[in-house]
Amino acid sequence: MGWFRGFGAFLHGRSPTWAVLAIQPANKHSTIVANSGGDVTDSDFAAIMKDLLIDSNGNSTVKDAKFFFQTCFGGGMLDDLNVALGDKVKWVGGSASRYDEVSWGFTNEVAGAGDYWTLGLVPELAKDQTVLQALEKADNNPWEVRGGVTETGQEVTGSAIGGDQIKLV
Image (tube, rainbow, N blue to C red; front, side, top):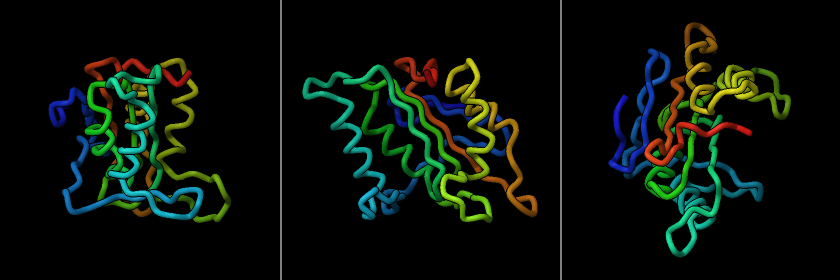
């Protein structure tokens, strides 16, 4: 475990499957697809979240925030969020994969089927524990994707301001 970029985000990586948050190089971007169909880069998403979650006086507008990315390259979203939210918002986040790895889904094309990461995470989130504990327990029970391949899940929290104590409900 170690401190990340001096913003008080505590990184966890106790098992061989999950690793300390990999920092995405400055010239690379992870993206998600908006409901409108357009791409939203990691830096744009972080800026949007900053505008929504931090007021003009620099105070948090929410009790806490939780971010889960089951997408390919989803880990790239977390480092930008950490910089944008800093020590102003109590938050926790997890991703199925590093910024440079795919996230493995099921072979069927059913909408909402999720991926192997969410298959392990969802039952843990239903328990009376912190989100970080759920992420760590899902980490300790990784699903083998196929042929020995597993996802390298990522997790980060603004623990300096209580992000490690956030519960889902």
